Length: 315
Image (cartoon, rainbow, N blue to C red; front, side):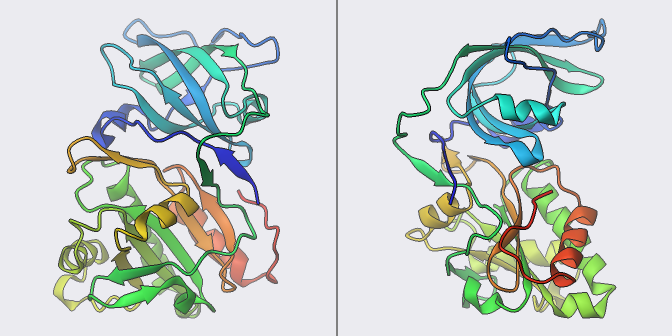
């Protein structure tokens, strides 16, 4: 089981991250510096110098998680997963590497260029805290939660079906985080409903990491709005649930979800979405918000039309 060291999240409020959703990296090589080149900034583009530490590297997805220092005039210190413009660069970065770069904010979104590795990680140093990073073939523990109907459920009860699981909290104000996860799950739910055979072999589960506020009544109202059935919703195919406060750290750690809060109301967090096979093992896992309903739907079809395997390639 692979484990990647990560420090405690220190992210800005989700709303401050809207401009970073399309973040990519311009280039990085063993001679570590490479200029932005042909993608010159437009005259209206804003640029910021950034410095941060690589927290996790998801080479198969072409994504890194970067803990940046405060960027004066733009955002406070935060940790987020960033999609790499050139996915092959992921293999050249390691958890613990400190980098500097130029952050370009313009018509093409947000792009990192001029990357320098200013300090390489000491890979033999044991981190103070380890987060589990889900890998294809990992058996998901039997976490227990309380759903929108006030009933205790556990993940084992979904064995025999493909379980689609994501993390949200109902007060999230950023359209690119929890609301996006819920909108996408709503689209997946409708796509599956159009195929009765697939619908019968799948289940959706949105897990809140805000159990103090997200009571069963709050989750019921939130969930029914996203299914579009409101008071007619029976939640037979899509549960909204939260773990107890005691169970919360374990489930967040296992699914690699970082959550912090400065005021107890706005939670700074990462995202995590998993496709779990009928045998209770991870088949696909997404640490960013860039997956699409079509991609998840295709994952479901692939899982159900193939023999169970421990090592399924993660797209």
